[in-house]
Length: 378
Ligand SMILES: Nc1nc2c(ncn2[C@@H]2O[C@H](COP(=O)(O)OP(=O)(O)OP(=O)(O)O)[C@@H](O)[C@H]2O)c(=O)[nH]1
Ligand SMILES: [Mg+2]
Image (tube, rainbow, N blue to C red; front, side):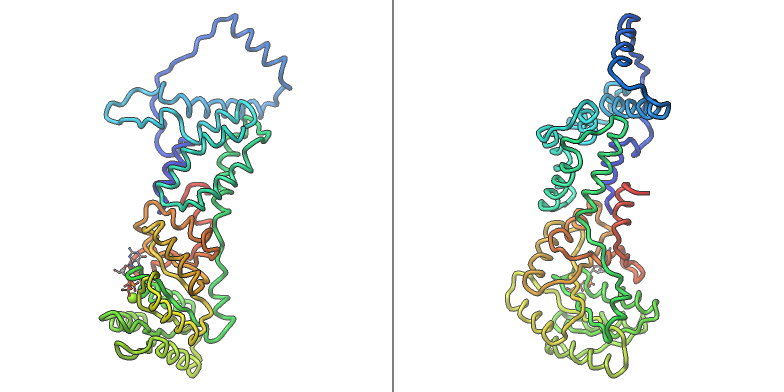
């Protein structure tokens, strides 16, 4: 998850690999030039404290390494350096400009292009890219930024920009305890991981000592009832089902009656995958919602499908209304732009990430996890 973006961000600050071998190209200054430089420095600047001097030296090193590393590296014929790397990247270009003077909007836009391409290539939705641009602009353009702080300010601004896209979900266990029975409805298109997520959540809740009943309201797809039954037996939770072709809304209703009678705390309703473009399927879903009155409607989308998942989430939100998102298959998603974008587009939190095929592979979503995965926080 986020490997590609993390690699990119870390390469900016030289944390992605061992430091490149350098040929020691000592810049020779004539004694006269050295004297002039010293004169300019001492006349135009307030004297620096010892600490500031160290910081400035470090900052100069970063800028120099980042912007001229290619000139100084031993050429590696096997590795063809890409053109944009030669020209510098978002970070190094910005760093150079910010370290010289206040950054203008035009300069920012020019530098942002590199990041914009990276984000789009990694499945970040256009709206989310725009939000990142706006946030970074606010933090960096026309700001008085000390040279010593420039690198940290850029990375800090990036972290803030990413945080602004994300929504921290409420504590699901607290929510569940606020209403009995607490009804959670799962929906999404075919094969996204709805049934697996129902099973994973049942497993998660059971481990917390919360009682669960499963509703096999996918009465459409062949073997769907058996699939959920297998999960219910393995996890050790009851399941309510009917026959194939039965009204899914009535299965949901039956399960809720069961929960009320047996004081079961949570009802997890599995539904058939439906194309969000098909009106009749959405109408059927509306009926399930009307009858089961869920406390939480979770859209299940595949992290790997990028803008498709975003479009699905948007449409389901517009038609049925979603309360939150589960993004499955995050374990096989190198790009992970969907994780960064879906909450910004729908204004709804991601509750969980599906991170594998086992019951325990359901990860509670937190902003901190995203930042950590991106290398922007320890
Ligand atoms: N790697 C990985 N695979 C997953 C994850 N979640 C689900 N899967 C796999 O995705 C496939 C489809 O999962 P299901 O749970 O059957 O999907 P569904 O949405 O219920 O499918 P339909 O009922 O046919 O619409 C299965 O092979 C699951 O094992 C996940 O987080 N990571
Ligand atoms: Mg299913």
